[in-house]
Amino acid sequence: MKIIMLGAPGAGKGTQAKMIADRYGVPHVSTGDIFRANIKDGTELGKEVKRYMDQGLLVPDELTVKILMDRVGREDCRNGYVLDGFPRTIPQAEVLDKALAEMGDAIDYAINVDVPDETIIGRMTGRRACVSCGATFHIVHIPPKQEGICDACGKELKLRDDDKLETVKKRLSVYHEQTQPLIEFYTEKGILKTIDGTAEMQDVFTSITDILGN
Ligand code: AP5
Ligand code: MG
Image (cartoon, rainbow, N blue to C red):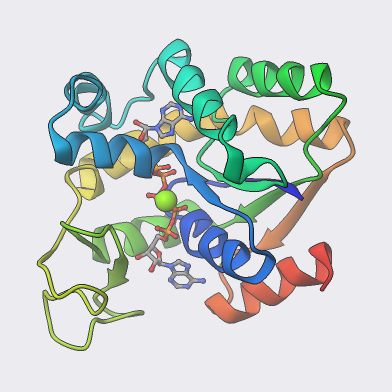
């Protein structure tokens, strides 16, 4: 099963992708998580992508495509994956499409998690992410058991640099300009499924399992 999660920044792609990965036993592949892990480890890639991410801009296609194709080429992705945050531009979608077509394969579903911009702003400025394991919480919707401390690993929770209000606004405008056209791209392919991402997390997941089946 090969799935793409589409949606604005903060729509809940990561939250739902993790639940899908657990339920269906496929790896959760997030380009954003890969980039953040590299920033944390201070790698050359991390230094390069940080410049873009902190401004709310997309990392150039060439670099992103290489990272993603390397990742999905690994053994654990052989039976499928859930892609979260990729593709984010038409050229990225075309590269993925072509690579899969060459293997006689294709994406099964593109799930569009639909959430209006006003809701997104509240979610992201309230989100707190673990500096160590990357687990995410929300100060109102998913508070950690102890304020500022990760439930999963006990390390510190922080506001992501790119979750500051001005950067969130920039990310939303980049989304509308560069990523939203993918909705039409996958509609034309007949695999787009739009779900209401404003519902409770578990209800959003139920709409997804209704599509994917048990
Ligand atoms: P990335 O990490 O992909 O960030 P994003 O798309 O901006 O998405 P987020 O991770 O912020 O949101 P999400 O949709 O995963 O929502 P989440 O589940 O966390 O990318 C970061 C950056 O990397 C990009 O800006 C770009 O620079 C670069 N990049 C990455 N991929 C790239 C690519 N392909 N090409 C170029 N550049 C790329 O939820 C958000 C919050 O809401 C959380 O607090 C959560 O707890 C809460 N929440 C979730 N669901 C619900 C719900 N149903 N009700 C209430 N609260 C909810
Ligand atoms: Mg995410």
